[in-house]
Each structure stands twice: as C-alpha cells, then as structure tokens.
Length: 218
Image (cartoon, rainbow, N blue to C red; front, top):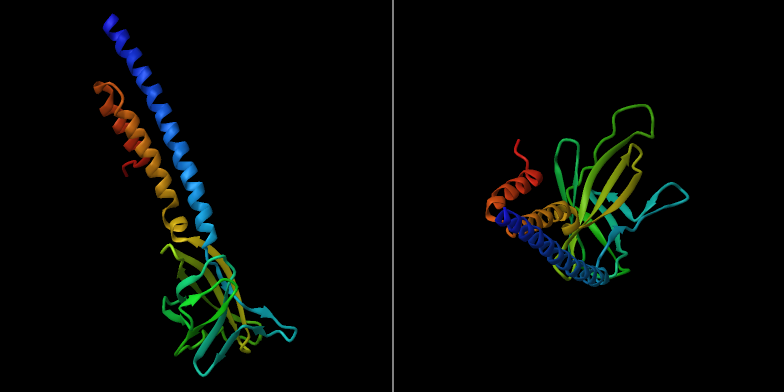
C-alpha cells in the first residue's frame, strides 16, 4: 500500500513539474514568436492591384489589347516584394501565367503584371451588355526572409470590354499553409513530453491517447 501511494504521489509531483516546465517553455516560445512577428512585420510586403474606377466606368490600371493583358499592382506593405509572379485560371482549369516587369517591388512602388498571348474569357451570349466572365488567380511573391506571400485576385471581363478587379491579401505562406499543422504539432509534442514523465506502466497508454486525439484513425 505504501509503495502504491508513493508511486501515485511521485506521479502527481512529476506531472506538476512537467506542467510547470511546459508552461515556462510555452511562455518562452510565445515571447520569441511575438518578437519574431514584430520583426517580420517590418519587412512584410503586400501587393494589391493599383486600379481605380473612373467616372466614365473604365478601370484605370488595367489594359487589354493585342492579346496582351496588363494589370498594375502596388506594394502597400513595409518590405520589398521579391520574385513576383501571377496566375489566372478559367473555369476549364486552364492556367494563364503572368510576369512582373520588375522582379523587386519596393514599398509604396508600383509595377505591372503582364500576360502574353492572352485571350479574355467570353461572357455568355445574351442580349445584355452587363454579362461578365471571370478569371480567378493569385499573385505570389516573397519577402527578404524567403517567406512566400499571396494575394488572391478576381478579374471580371464584360461583353463591352470593361474589366473589374477585386483582391484580397492571403497572408504569408507560413500562415496559409502551416498554421493549423503547427498548432496541432505543438500540442501533440507537449502531450508526448508529458507522457514521458509518467510511471512506465502509464506511458504507453498516454502516448496512444495523445496520438488518437490528434491523429484519429479513419
């Protein structure tokens, strides 16, 4: 009985120590992330279409002629945008690749995206001049820390040749692709670390519980 009670007391103390250690590690990582986030914000580029609606209904900042399509974009972020490319995709899955005239776009500076051999999508044949056809795409670029960024764009083409552009900054590649995986991985790592401090007869059960919680089988 004394041996069992001693094992339980030792397990509780070990868990408490592990929790405290994990909390200190989490606090340290949180501070490091906040510092890193502040540094990254200083060099974060954000490319957005540099277009505006004119009083005559035209969109200034886009041009479509001789199978060439141009779109002006401006870096509204704090850091330079590097290796700028863009793609547009139609409903049939055809991908149209565009390139920037400048490979480095400094903050508050514009450049032009250019698509060659470009045939705009044709709106449905109706009697209305307000019929639109749409292309969806993304502008991709990197920052000085080699982190990829993306801006989602939607380009609508009207029967009479008018063009309408919408855009939304998607964030960095780290935010877009791995934010959920990183959070899940950190939680799983913490639980497995905690399991390692349990008595041997409980370690296997705790590991299986952690893996089942974060990676349930189909």
